[in-house]
Amino acid sequence: MRRLITALLALAIAVCIFLPSARYTEDEDSVLLARTIYALGKNESYQTKLKLGSVVMNRLENDWFPDDLGEVLTDPQQFPAGSRYDSDSLRAAHELISGRRALRSDALYYQAADASAPWGEEYRVASAGNYNFYCEDGNA
Image (cartoon, rainbow, N blue to C red; front, side, top):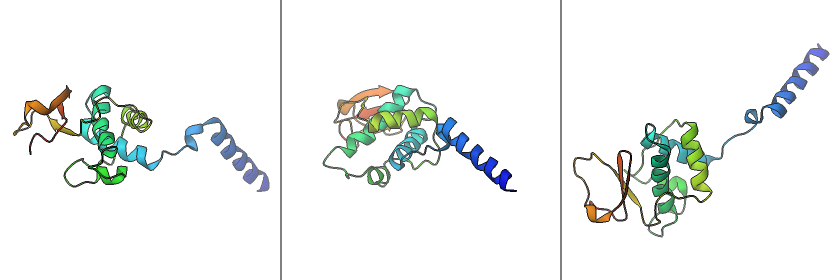
């Protein structure tokens, strides 16, 4: 019995050493952002995912929005609360948290390109996939 326990313990240690993903866990902010990116753009290109995440990070760095990623993401009626994510969404989240941006810093809003009440074009700074990105709330 003692040999069996020793062998199982050795196997568990070997798995942790040779499979780093078995002992690696993602930080909460990366997962939260990845879930939001996936909820918004699961069928979008990687560049569109970066732009969607850039809106979130631009808000985080803007004085008009909360200083906490979780608070930015849970601001009422702003971002969907996803429960799943894929490898592209997680990779985009890591890049964005590390400082990469795909939009200029004043791009704080997004809207689906096929929205029934489109925002004013004078504030649009970019379009990607099925989204338009704005520097001001064109709905105000």
